Length: 230
Image (cartoon, rainbow, N blue to C red; front, side, top):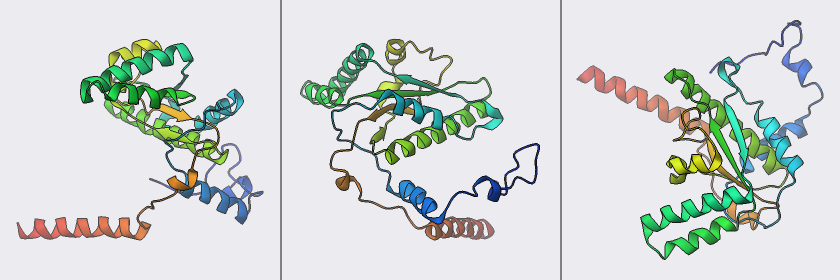
């Protein structure tokens, strides 16, 4: 990953400082708090999110970095008729896996979600390009979730088994030959109004950066040592 001062074309004097000259330390800290504070939400309030808010989130998602400007993401807002078919399929799969008693529980949980996104990643004959497309879609998903979180809207990113079922694609009218079927980067994105019991989901932390860096250095050193003694 490379980092440095961005060049915006036409005017090389337009540095990062020019571009964000109106930003402040407080704004930076606010952004950092969103990055640290976002959590996956499992309990949702029943009120739906306004369509304008969803479209704004999708628009911001599209600013994710993508190699060669492929913009490989495709968003689907699932309507009630389609969602019923998706829920039926999910319940069927749950029963097959866990037995009849699991079906009603699964159905109740899915029916309590007030809305669903599906995000797909375009396929490509070139394996590297397809991998890059998927990575770009992951970035787009993060953009979307961070924006919605800042708006007080909870999101859950899932990649459940239903996304590897051909019938899932058929119910959505998606050609799985053109859009990646085994990943569907954010499938489904569940959203709602104000998250319920948000404090309960604020636990957990990431390892300190120096720990991750040190772990990689130690791993490389150990591998080098083993190689020299082999």
